[in-house]
Image (cartoon, rainbow, N blue to C red; front, side, top):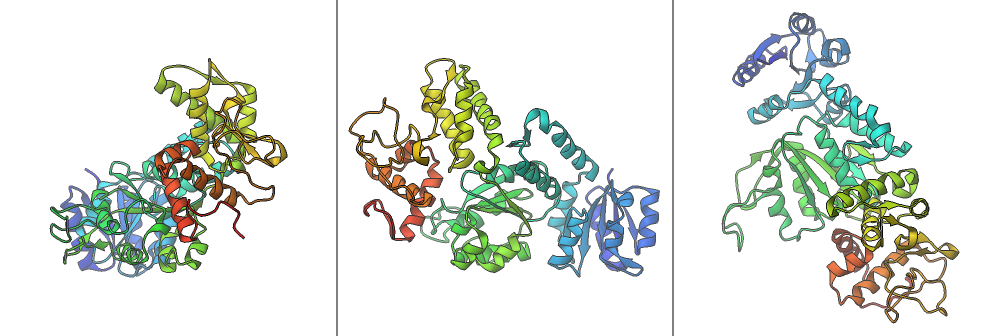
Length: 484
C-alpha cells in the first residue's frame, strides 16, 4: 500500500487531508513542522509528500531543497498561501504539482493516481540521453545537433512537473512532437493527450469544441457534447496555434487556468478540470501581443516554461538522420526498400528547408515515389539553383528560357505549357512564398487539398497562410506583383 506524508501546521487541515488520502487506499503520516517531517521520512520513506509552505520552524521550501530527504518521494505543494511565483519556485526545486487549500477532492485524486518516484522518471530520461548517440532520437524527436540537445534538456526538466509549457517556432519545426514527448515523459502519460489546432476550428464552434455544450444550448445542439477539457481529463491538452483563438475565448481560457474550473456552453454549473496545458504558436509571442493576436495576461500565464524550436536550417547536421528516418518509415509502409545516394544526401543538407521538418518529410516521400530503382538520387529533390534561387520539382511548370531569375524551375520531365511564376532577385522569402502559394491555388481552381499537395505542405499550413493573406487584403484574385 502506498504511503503519504502530510506536512501542515494547521491541525484541522492536516486531519482533513489525512482522511481524504486514507480514503484513496494510502497509509498516512502527519507532521506539523519540519523537524517532525524529517523524523517521519527517516522512519518510512513516503511515496508522496503533501507539503505546506509556512511552518513554525521554517519554510516548506527548506525540506524540498534537501535532495537526500525527498529524492525518492513525489512532493506536492499544498498551501493556502501559494502564488504563481512561489509555485514556480517549488516546481523548479522538484515539486511535481501544487494544490490550493481547501484541497479539491477531484484534483487530489488526480495527483494521487499519478504518483511516480522522481528517481524512476530521472532514470527514464537518463536512458534516453545515454542512447541518443546511438539511436539518434529522444522520445519522438530526432536529431543529435547542439540546438536539439538543448531542447532535450528542457524537456527533461519540465516533463515531470505540472508546469504549463509554451512552444514557439516556425511552421513545420515539430511543436506537436515536442508536446507529445513532454506528455509521454510525464506522470500523465497514462491519460489522454489531445491536440487542438485553434486555427482550424470555426470561430463559431471553437468554444463548444474546447469547453463542450449542453443539449439545446444553440441551434443544432441536439445532445450534450463533451469538450476537449473533459476528454483530456487527467492528461494533457495541446493548444496549437493559440494566437488563432478568438480574444473573447482567450479570456475564458485564462480563467480556467487560474481557477481550474470551466462551464459548458449553455450551462450555469461550473466543472473542475485536471488538465495540463501545452500551447504553441509559429508567431513571435510578444509581436502577437502587440498586434492584438494574443492577450498579454494569457501569454504570462502560459509562458511559465518557454521552449523555442530551432528551424531545420539551423541544425543542418540533423538532415541526413531525419531523411533516413522518414525514408525507413516509408519503405516499411510501402514494402520496397530504397536508399539515398551520397549526392542526394548532399543536396538535402545544402537546401535551406523553409518549410522545416514537415517539408523534408514531404520531399522524401515524393522522391521515394519518383525513384526508378533502389537508389534515390538528387534529380527529384529540392536544391539550391544558380543565382542563389531555389529549385525543385514541385513548381507550377517549366519556365521559358527568356524568363529572368526563375523562382522554382522544374526538371525537363515536367509538362510544357503549365503556368510559371517569376520573381526578381532580392525579393523576400515571404513575398516568394505568398506569390507561389496564391498562384498555385489559382492554378488548381481554389482546390485547397490539391494546392497543398503540389506545394508539399500540410493543409493546416495552407489554411493558416491564406488567413494571414486575407487579413492583409491579399487573395488569389489579387495581382501577383510584389507588395510595396
